[in-house]
Length: 130
Image (cartoon, rainbow, N blue to C red; front, side, top):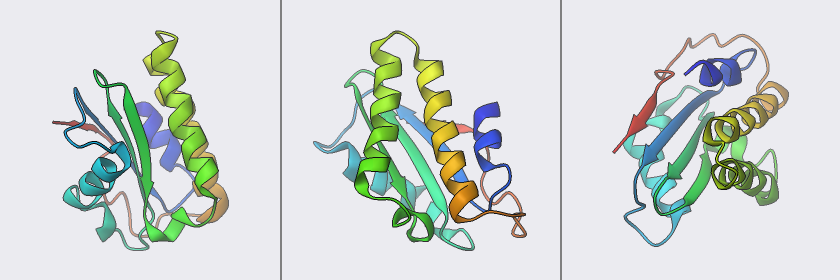
C-alpha cells in the first residue's frame, strides 16, 4: 500500500495496517495490541511500530503504537486517528479514511522519530488480514 510507505518516509517508524471482517474480542484496542505483538511489531529497533487496525463488518478500529512513539501524544491523538478512519467507512470512503489516518501517523512519526531509518524497512509495507 503506497500510503504505508508514505507514512514511513522521513522517520524511523514502522507502520502496518491489519484488517479483518469481525473483531473476535469485545475491545478493538485489545485486539490491536494482540495483533501488534503477533505481527512482531514490538521487535523493531526502537519500538516505533504503529498498527492501524480495522474490523470492517463490526465497524471497529483502533491504533496501537509501540513505546517509542505511544507517549508522544495523549490518547486523544490516537483516538482521533481511529475516529478519522471510522468516518471514512461511514462516509463510504474507506480508502480516504485509511489515507488520512496514515498521513496523521506519518506526520507524528516525522516529528517524534525523524530522520533516516538506519535499521531499514523492518516490516513489510503491506496490509495484513485475518
